[in-house]
Length: 314
Image 1 (cartoon, rainbow, N blue to C red):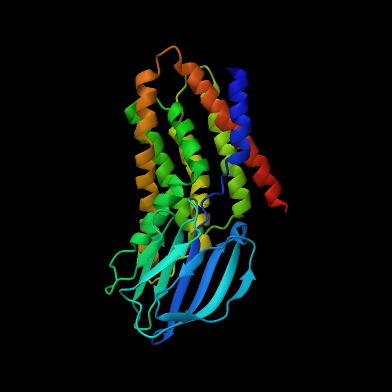
Image 2 (cartoon, one colour):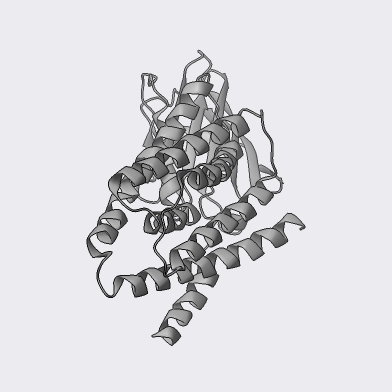
């Protein structure tokens, strides 16, 4: 049994990546009627298989110029259409499961449009009317948590350490309030911490809760631990949003929708493992399952910490 478990630990450590959610971002700014300046941002790891954008047939593009920063490749070009693109479709190709694309269009009349494309929904229809609410940022926050393996494994270990529904509410509420605070402070530039350092510290929080969960002695996880760790995870959430930015006039509302998306995804994840643990906690095999799960997650956390700590100095 131990040999099998260590085999899975080895495999998961090398194939699990805590940096997986890194969306592309396509920005169209209408400079004159039906003429747009375009910037496409996508992660460096996709430079050999970059996202491809298919515009309506009545549009043509100029020569693409490329530049880059630490995390992204940036493609810049002009898009000229013979008529308005409202009511038309823009399609993305070469998006994998872990890479969504945010489309932001700023029209010359002051209106704007934003939407998310992903591997399951590659095509976006541009509406004639502007949406009142920035739904795209809700979807972005929702996807960020569901595709952020480091946050998910942290929550799973956290649930192992919570006894009873009331205590679960306390711990999750503390975690939620804390990461909402630092998400806002960090994104607004009020508090600035290196994202590389934050990612390494998030890996440490995973190791900490995994070690606690692996302990054979049952003990309650204090809510203030969850609050402290939530502060760190909030900086991580902010890093994902900061990379693509908010390209509309609804900064506060977009930030709120991004945060709500995270919370809804979190609430969608928690019930299943909590109910399983609640009903089987007193079974003979539960402690073994809990121990193996915690050690596997802790091992992955160690791998992430080493990988991210090295990244701080590179």
